Length: 241
Image (tube, rainbow, N blue to C red):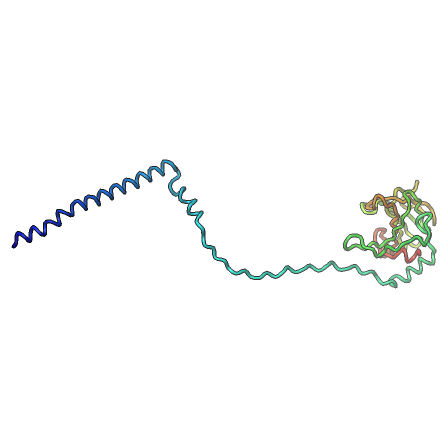
């Protein structure tokens, strides 16, 4: 009985050898095949297999987490610039009445009082008040001194162009004539002038529209230092109308 048991145990051992050999052989073939594929990839793509795999990784869809957004409030609206408020009509009532009694000559030859239009409170730009009287007339129409006085300054400026500053006899008020085409011949600083004297000619110098010749005429009350370029504006229309 003993020999029969030994034969029974040896038979499976002989049958398992071929199966183990094939398993080892297949593993070796797979390993060699993998090595050949890797070698081929390195040959075709010198930069490495990672360079081939990277686009595939990047192309893969990614799950993006969408967070709820906070409702944005609209930006605040900037308030409009403050309006320029004209001084009350009575602010210079005494000065206006004083000048009216002088019966100033109209500053442009051939213009009648009913031709005048009040432009004192009109806006120039977004925040600058005109503070002057525009008198439209053909180019080179004579400009006249509104009363006796002295030429305080003949001045050229970007805005006013060819201009004249004239003091009244008491040097209380200054009369300003701007956008002139030219001065009258012989006019100079410090000259004494008479009412109605031609001192210049209507034009469009400075920032005046080239197709709209006119005289820009203003009156201002000077301070104690008597600076020809500085003072408090008075509406010429209220004086001349």
